[in-house]
Image 1 (spheres, rainbow, N blue to C red):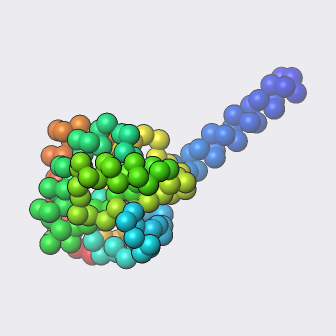
Image 2 (cartoon, helix red, strand yellow; image 1 turned 180 degrees about the vertical axis):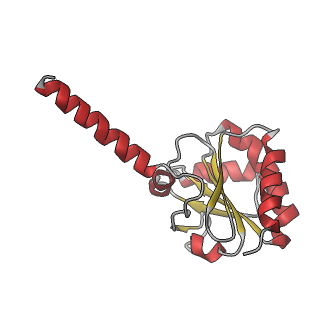
Length: 168
């Protein structure tokens, strides 16, 4: 093997380890975050939702599947919020106005936070929009979902209902 081949192999291995180190797997504790709300300066942290089932959704205004998901997620939130379920949507838009325009068309009453630099999307290993994580009452990632189609909501609701029934 030449020096060039060895260097290329080393770089490839280093890149694969750094990417896999960032990917979040089922059964892991969800990384703690603190992010500002989209419409205020108030900061929310994942720890404030401990004891609840959390649907954590990374989204952007330019994301076509997000236009499908938001109305369905709002219904899911309204149906289960009194049972210990919460929904936290983390917006990835660099421009605040783009997110605000989206929300005028697809309003939501759940918490919407902002990660314009994508730091937390990186920590969670987000590669597509939307990507969602269902986190149990103990803060453990129990389901990861990439993309969104209208039929996905039935499986998501089953998972949420199952986790709501689990004891803390």
